Amino acid sequence: MELTTGKNIFIKFYAPWCGHCKAMEADWEKLAEDWKDHNGPAIIGQVDCSVELTLCEEFEVKVYPTLYYGDPAALEVYSGERDYESMANFAKEYLSKDLCSISNTDACTTEQKAAIVEYEVKSTADLRIISEKVEKKVEENENTFEKAAEDLQEKYRTLVEHFNAEIDRIETETHYSILKEIVELREDPIIHFTEDADEL
Image (cartoon, rainbow, N blue to C red; front, top):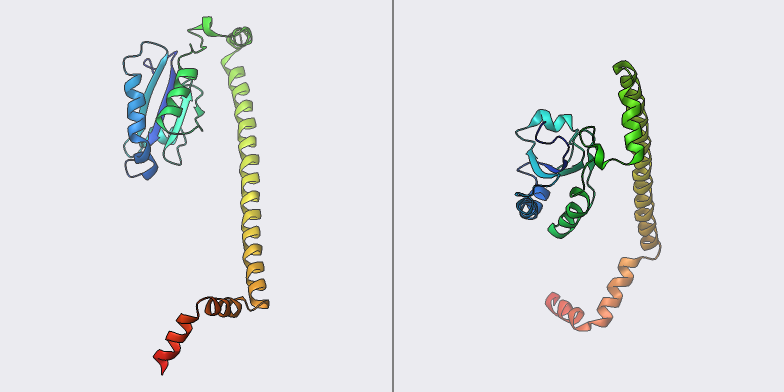
């Protein structure tokens, strides 16, 4: 924990057997090498979820690779492109900034400093209540998103089924296979003649 205190981190959760993980492995290693001797506020790392099972469960890693960035206490999912250039540009823009924290208030905005003051005077019990309310709102938002995503997937399945059924109906009503066969024979009568000759 001391290693990441006050640091911006960019971390990859992966599984050795994952094809997508293997595809970005070289680019990630190149990015990590760029930042290896960096004395600034950023750390580039990775976690093997076939080994660090508990840690991956703690961060609710469900797909590989999953990339997180930001404050170790409140990481955000990285959803950008996973090629070297895209990740390097992202790291340069976001990870080289000083991270606002209780131990580094110089990097905080006026609003963040006010929040620190406000929370520090509250009791632990009050802070837990506030935290639970925030987590509940986040969970509600996630549930709303998942429901909307499920509805979209169902609509997509319905559209695909309707599309396929409509194609089948059109081709059946127009006897498309017969039409196509006649057109092909007329465009290439040699094939038709050869086939007739073989039968004789």
